[in-house]
Length: 418
Image (cartoon, rainbow, N blue to C red):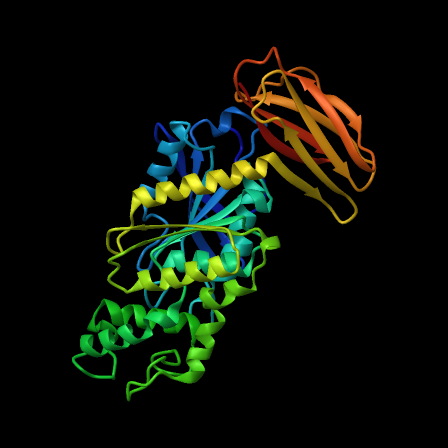
C-alpha cells in the first residue's frame, strides 16, 4: 500500500476492506476545535491501483445523537452504485459532528459546542485534499446529510457556494419558522403541560436544547443558552432573529444562477417533525429564484430513506458529468476554459481551449487502468481560442481520462469512446 498521509499531521487510522470499498477509520488534530476528531473515509476498492486518477468527494454529515460511524447504509448504497457502473467513482467522507453536552453540533460555530463550521470547512476539507487523491475544486465537491446533517449541508452549501457544486439534503427543516408552532405545542405536552422545560422530558426537548445551544448559546445561563420559548410560552424575538441568520429558507434567496449551486432535496411526506411542509416551501423558493434543484418526496417518516438517497447520488453524478464536459482552470493571472467534444466520441475528439494568457501545456490521455495512451503531447496555448484534434479510432470502447498540465496545475477531464 502506498503512503497515505504526506503532511506532518497528528493522525491515526485503521483500515477495513469490503468488495466495494476501503474504509479508513481516521483521526486527526482539528485546529478549529483544538482536539483530536474522527472521520470515516471511504475509498473506491481500486483507489491505490491508479496513481494518476483523482476523484470527486461527497462529504456526508450525520444526524443528531450520532457520529461518523452511523449511516453505514449510505456507503453501502454509494459503492454498490459505483461497482455496478451506475455512477462515477467518488470518495465518501463522514466527519464526526457529535459533541457535549447535548445531541450534536448542528455543524455551526457555537460558543457552547465549538467551531464546528470551521472544523468542516477548513480542517476536514483541508485534511482530505492534502492527503488523498481528491480533486481540489468546486466542481468536484459535494455535501450531503440527513436530519441535523441535512440542515448542516443546507446551511454550509448556501454560505459557501464557491466551495460546493451541489448538495443532497434529507429530512430537515430548511424553512424553520414553519415548524415553530407545532414544536411549541409538542414541547408543552412533553413537559407535562409546563413551559419550564426539562432536558430529560423526551426527544423533542432534547432536540430543542441542542438547537438552542447551536444558535443562541449563552454560557452565563443554566442551561447555557438563550431559550427560544420563555416560561410563559412566548417566542423570544431576539432569539428568533438569531435563528433567521442561519435559516436556509431566508439565505438561499441571496444565491444567484452564477453561484452554480444545485440542490437535491428529499423528505418523507409523513415526517413526524413536520419537516415536509418546510421542504415544500423551500422548493417554492428555489423555483422562484431559478435555482437548480430536484425534489424527491417519498411516502414515509423521518427515517433515512436509502432509495431516495440513491436517486440523490445519481443527481450528484449527473452534475459531475456536466462539469467534466466544461471545466475551468483559474489562477490570479490566467484563465483557461476547456471543452472536449463530441463526448461520447467514435473516431476523433476535439479539444477547445480558450486562454487569457499564453501558457505552456502538456496533454496526456489515460485509460481506466491508469495506463498512458501514447506519448505526452506538448503545446502552447495562445490568447483566445485554440483547437486541437486527436485520433482515438484505435482505442477500445470505454472511459478515458484526458489530463492537461498547465503551468504545473493538473486538470483532468473524462471522455467516452463508443
